[in-house]
Image 1 (cartoon, one colour):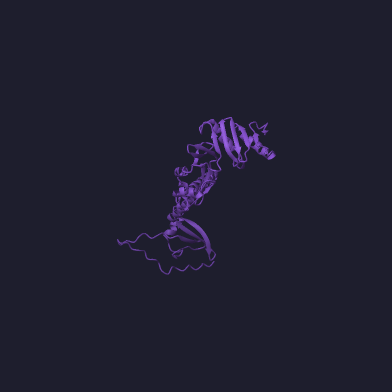
Image 2 (spheres, rainbow, N blue to C red; image 1 turned 90 degrees about the horizontal axis):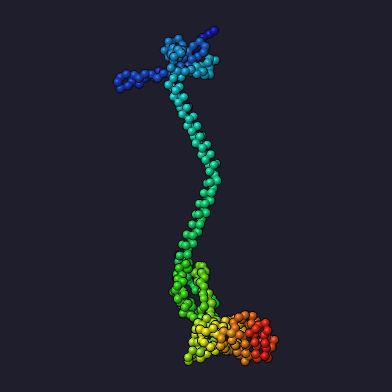
Length: 343
């Protein structure tokens, strides 16, 4: 068999570096290429015939390296001899990367398990924190808006006033203009409305953004009682609403035994308040000597014997029907509403 031609030699052998001390460092061991047929050649291109310590080392069982088979060249198999230190470095690099990947996979799996087992608790926490945050934001927003100048009183409206001028009430509350709706001074409002004795009660309503509504309930006058040389218009509680030298035309005269603090006045006041508005407007005089003896005089001269204040609403309904049924009668006794008497 014909021997194959040797591989071409390297065109230029690398020159080892010379250290500062004039000595050359130990050359790095090159991997060998071992051909399986009739010859060997290392990477540097030395032929098989030349003696090579590296080849000897590679053949010995104690050689500091390992071999690896590779694809053939021109039909010959090639075996690479890898130095021991390169093999250990590669093995260490592979082992470190595998350990790092395993640790990373373990951490990812652990985090996934923690997320899976804490899913419900995290949802509950998110719901609680979300609700709390929304509530706090709502409260803070409401407080800031209520106390800001954007919601200051700009208009005062009076409702329920018939006997008094609403403009007078608005004027008395003018000091509240410009105050935030949440800071309206209730004490000052009460003091201002106390100047109007006819106001029995009131309520404040806030109408955002800038309106304050005052609902008033006026006292119901029951008549005018003579007080020396003047007449005082009073309500059922004995509160003096106004005074004048002459009796007002629409206020019935009160002839009460014992004055405003007596039981007779208490009964007469309750009787007048129980009458319908149109019937009360026709009363010209109220007489009462005791709590059980109240008598009314109507504008057309009719007399109504009322008795006590008990069952006043029922007596009023019976009286209205009796007047409609017997308009020509002059006396109506409803002291006992079940058995009224017409005379």
